[in-house]
Image (cartoon, rainbow, N blue to C red):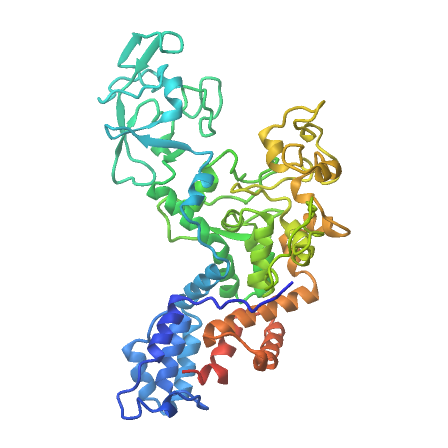
Amino acid sequence: MMRRTLPTFTTLALATATAALCLAPASTDAASPAYCAPTAEMDPLQLLRQSSLDLRGRVPAFEEYEQVRDAADPQAEVETLVAQMLESEEFFTTIRDYHQGLIWGTLDDSILTSLFASQRRLRRNGADTWRLTNMRRQYRGNFIDCLDEPQVEFDAQGRPVPISVYQDPACDDGTCQQEGYVMVAPYWDPDNPIQVCAFDAQEALLGESGVECSVYHPNDEECGCGPELTWCGPDSAGTPNQLIRDSLAQEPARIFEWVVRQGASYLDAFSTRMTFMNGPVAHYYRHNTGTTAITLGGAVAYEPAVGSVPDLQYGDTDNWVGVEREAPHGGAFTTLGYLIRFASNRSRANRFYTAFYCDPFVPSEDGLPPEGDNPSPNLRERAGCADCHQSLEPAAAHWARWRTGGTYGFFSPEEFSFEEPRTDCVCGPSEGLNNCSAYCSTYFVTADNSSDEEFGLYAGLPQSGSWLEGQDPQNVEAGPAALVDSPEERAQVAQCAVRNLSEHLLGRELGTDDFVWLDGHSQAFADSGYDYAALVRRLVTDERYRTIR
């Protein structure tokens, strides 16, 4: 398996810094090659600009330039300002943005459908009235919308009294009914009320059968979207859902920011149960139930407990509150933002190895060899695949209990065994087997979704456990946090963190001449208790940083 140098992650700040450093001084020396040659010490004003761009993402203030110019010792004054930068809010924002880029922590529009697969979606009809299209038959007896006129009458329980009732053989029982609309201030834009069909806007807490209306019950005509439409949302492509998506994408990077801000060990970001929620994230965790549901606590099959969701309003976007999650959570790599960004266990492991071990999985430069007849379904034995997959498969097993394919949840040991086949999932088209449920087909080895060899070995067992060998099943129960639990793994993460940051700050890949220098900084990082802010300070005061142009 070929290994290659990890590509440098270049931020806007770095690009700006590069452009700024290319600005020649207003002097006759500007065109001189000697001016651009490395020097033992950078000009203090140039060093100030470079440090500010890298640590705060902006050029220094005019007053800071003046402060350095007027100082008796300009270099010492720059160091004083750098120390202040490392305590600024802008620095912690830069740290968060840097790690969000390192994780590839963005969620695009294609993610929206899976994020809101279980959401009751309000859609607008031609008359600018919002309604739940999948509840029209339950509410009105046919696939018709409410009337385009205000709802004026309600019964003693506060439920809408139909404005029009008529007989129509197209209706379920021969009777159709239509109500009007009401004006509602939705949670996503309370200052701008919208028209909502009155049945869809019902606020009752309990439905006809006593069920809780906050949980989706598609057959209960007495359940609506609740106060301020809290239990529903606009169509998944709408701006409110994009805000939730973008907030969820920040969650793993916020954990890294918190660790750096606290001066804690950088390795805590890989194992801590602490996470962070703002208003949109809290709203999502509290109200999006179903296949992507998150429990507030306790043991519910297939759903991870995230702790007490804070009481934040949906619009409270800038207030991020710490939440202590429960087991089996660990670090940034069991957050929804990471797991749904990388929809398979192999892709989760690959990104981890690339970004935090600096050890990406890359095929040979010569390409994959031609395959013979009937290639093995076990990629650990397949020509051209084995070199990577001998390491990738056990690494992916660390996420084997977490859902894949764009959904979010945890498979508890009580319900999801890697040792005892699930009898209802020993299924498929073969004679004597039952048809497979969607659940079995998605997560278990069935005759429908596997080769004869795989089905013969793993029928009825979780797909994520196929082809594991030796001690690999221990990774399943240990989870992603176990990727940093040995001295060798911690040393590799430390060296990779120093390498990534060095290449980011120096604006180039490290070469063989840099390895001794890299080892020295890696050891200092470990000796500091993996204090990331201290690492940043060491690098920006290092001679190599100060001699770049």
